[in-house]
Amino acid sequence: MKFIFFIVLTSVSMFSYAGNLKPNVVIVITDDQGYGDLGFTGNENIFTPNLDEFAEQSTLLTNYHVDPTCAPTRAALMTGRYSGRVGVWHTIMGRNMLREREVTMADVFQNSGYNTGLFGKWHLGDAYPYRPQDRGFSTVVMHGGGGIPQTPDFWGNDYFDDTYLTVKPNVKGFENGAYQQYKGYVTDVFFDEALTFMRESKQQNKPFFTYISTNAPHSPKRAPKEYSALYESLNNKDLANFYGMITNIDDNFKRLRTFLEKEGLDKNTILIFTTDNGSAGGSRYYNAGLRGGKNSNSDGGHRVPFLINWPNGKIAKGEVDQLTAHLDILPTFIDLLSLSAPKNMLKADGTTIKGLLYGDKESLRDRTLLVESQRVFTPEKWRNSVLMTEQWRLLNGEALYDIKKDRAQKKDLSKQYPEVVNNLNQQYDAIWQDLKKEHHITSAIKIGSKQQNPVTLTSHDLLRSPNYAQQGIVWKMNRKGSWQIEVVAKGEYQFSIRRWPAEFDKAITDSHLNGAVYKSKQAYFQMGDHKLTQSFEDNAKEVTFNATLNPGVYQLDAGFIVEKGKESSANYVYVLNKDIYESPLTDWQSREGLGLPKALASEEFPLVKKAKKKRKKKPNKNK
Image (cartoon, rainbow, N blue to C red; front, side, top):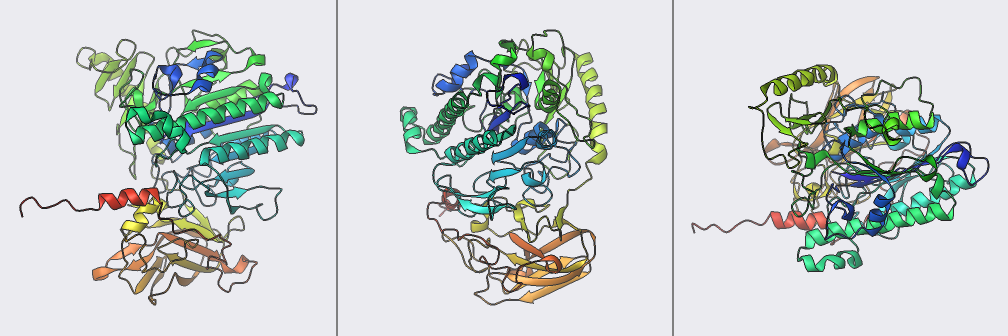
């Protein structure tokens, strides 16, 4: 999963509204857009006139790298530390939850007196203490999980008129987060909410850090018709929608710049545009001479555009060709803006690139950086990895490419330069031995705290083989898995387990869109010394288990006993600490009791349609 991001900063002495003593910062980040999915990188089929104009006015880091998929990139961007060091080396299975000890970019800005807002995708945890509102963001409008519609996302979201988790500290009912439906296309909505947040911050004379993290152009590929229609001549529906989503982003970027101009912020703003990994939709058609796309350890998977513009900051325009990375952004902000990092902030793996932005052509010429895409439960040495220098790329410890002479990485030079391979392997070993010390740590979702009660668990975060997307819930049963749980307070707990989310309000044994039917009459619950089963009726929507728990870390297994005694993990578990719950306990586990709006049983559910087609059996040619 990829994503593009923009960053906006304003200088102390140059503010156009009185009383604000600190620069503003805005980051816009898009998902799954690669180096070649832009006009200014040479793609003649895509329309991105506003970003192309911005590129002409900006500085371009031409050798800037991220992780090959989204959650790891976001973790490194937010912390300035390797994704493998902060517990995020996958996009699911609890390996996308940013370790609680980590200080984030939002924490740093909040500690420095900023209003902080996230609009769009987070993908570093959906339950306490991993939610964005737990990690430094005071205002949040977000979809769940790593994409729309994944399991943590509100049921049936499809990019149009969706329902998003909303946290607004000054709006009654939304102080701690609640779901709200928004009219319009997903990217338009996130920009709308971000502009409102910035306008309100200005009215409060408060500096702001705004992180606009669009889900587009991540799959499912759905663009407003007027945008996909621009690409009908390509005779490729998926590509037309993919490019259409990007052109819509381009228009929204123009809206952002117009807003900044109208509010008098444009001259004092640092604006950055980049992406989170290689293309998921366009690399086969145009890839700016690079090899690979999303999830690749070749440069097409992790080299992405990074544009920075700051007129009053007098950042040098042109190209910077030194090796840089997402790890460098937070250290650069701290240096460039003299931000106050919390005392518990851990040492960064990245470094400030302030000097490069002001014309230093000599620094960082001899650095080495690691990029990896593990996507497994426990990281493996050299798995889908690359060690980079300014000249060399060593892939998986074996294949060697001179990236200066061979941008497309066609000629493996490992046999011609064995001494280079050996040297890079030694450097990798040192990094790997350091990172692997904490690969055994599993982030635990906390239950029983006042910060979130009840807590929603989804199969996205099962430690093994999860149903991470909503189409999986429709079409198949889970294999058995478990959640890593930390009980923070002794007390009486209730666990409401479901196949369908509470907002969808369907019976456990109901199917949807002719999907899978659970032939089950019994549920199970296993946690610590508690090993329980319970029968339920055909029309039951959930099954509740009671347990007295002491503080500690547990493995939670809960689900349904289906055909032939097989155990299938629940897709949703709602956990309540009864002792601290302030509302009536009667029917707390119902949709109404959980305060959820009702989801629609949409027949337009895009991922379900795709899954349905895949289930059709091929004819037996032998008959």
